[in-house]
Length: 281
Ligand code: PDD
Image (cartoon, rainbow, N blue to C red; front, top):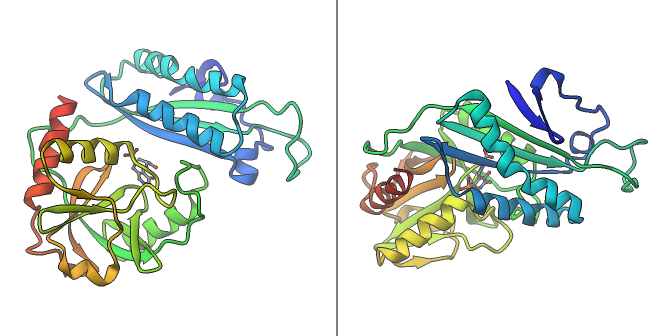
């Protein structure tokens, strides 16, 4: 496919990615995954804002870099046009760029690498029921700055693949006995009609979908408590569900082979699923 790389639209095989890219050598990069439904990008400005925050979080805050990040929006529109895509996942990534020699110290005149790739995807059936999944609980051994959407995804990847290899659909993460989020989605629980979800205190990625779903909940007069669920209280919840750009609202029917309530999508998740699907339509 044609990708956007450093201001050019080029076949991905022609993209000149340096072996000395600091994104690869040091994991110095941030990213976003955005979704296009029926030719309409979803919450694109929110994703761009978060990308700019992530860039500031890794010290890439010079005006040229922030301006280059803002170019990702029109560049994505052009990628969709080039490939004639109406349904797509669009990946954005900015890394610190190639620098010689390999050094912990930032090198002067390092120009960030700016990438966008549009992946074709299947349309979703907005009228249908939500997908469902199962999860296993694993330690959240990520760093303390999970609010930065960093490309440094090794802990997320290890957890997710461990979960999948053990036959589960998702990895739920816990730190100090509290559930933070999932490896690549946010986690919400419902108890006595109230949504419980980990606060946006830097220890989770504050998902764009999370924010949209919590707004919907408040508009629907569903009480929300941004407080983490202790794992010791997992057996007291009536519902569990994940939210994310690739997850939408996905009820979790069992956690480590223990059914969540009656192992059926619950009313709160279903209502929020339908409300989110309405936004997409
Ligand atoms: N991940 N938490 C983590 C750790 C994530 O990686 C993601 C998204 C989310 C949900 O955020 P949002 O609603 O903004 O998509 C929460 C993307 C989809 C990914 O890495 O593929």
